Length: 317
Image 1 (cartoon, rainbow, N blue to C red):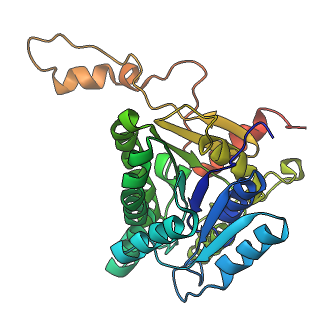
Image 2 (cartoon, rainbow, N blue to C red; image 1 turned 120 degrees about the vertical axis):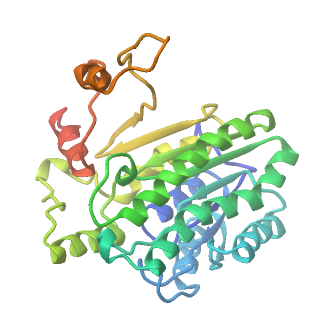
């Protein structure tokens, strides 16, 4: 295999199922040693136990790979430190962290409880920070590290009932931008992916939208094929986690087999004179120029619109 993880050690959080499981299996298949972390329980963050992580570890070992299970929570300092400590104790080094753990608690903003807001941010955003902070000294000491984060189109494009989830994913984007700068001098690269997959979290979200009368779930047409399977998200994540990758500071959308780097930039806009502030009326008069996007750039109003747009670009046979 051209992309190899021989001699490398990876932590994948939230790897007991879905997209995280696909990442862990692929890294192990390419020779990497993997700590499979999953708190267990349901996608709402209730319950817990070692069964999910252990099942994935058994899959890896049955295929001839090397892995250990961990069911500590990423949301506390104690849990995050324990995850990294176990990887170091078991394998003696740490090269890759894929921060993928997450939960959902969907509700309209007016109906969202403090607990549902706090718990979702604690798992996605704070968990990503705490696991990364625990891993950082080990990567810095060896002058090598690959950090991959799971973001979401809910943050970039927005969808109702997911204010907590979207805010957490948006925070992760800011974290990635900062880490790419802080890691540059230490050989530590930071990137993020925006995956799409039919996982238990996606199903639960669709159910919550249906119950609230929100029409966000789209019926998948046959031309999608298998492109909503979780494993479609592993190639870009695993590449970014590999030694072959030298890119950092990137956010990559994976949608129905189409992979694209998300543009975070500023178009020409409208330039006012610099001697005094423009008037409100001038802003109104030039608002079309201020909002104009370059040719070829599509800004989806929602994650579902991104799927429809990708489908319109071709069959992907």
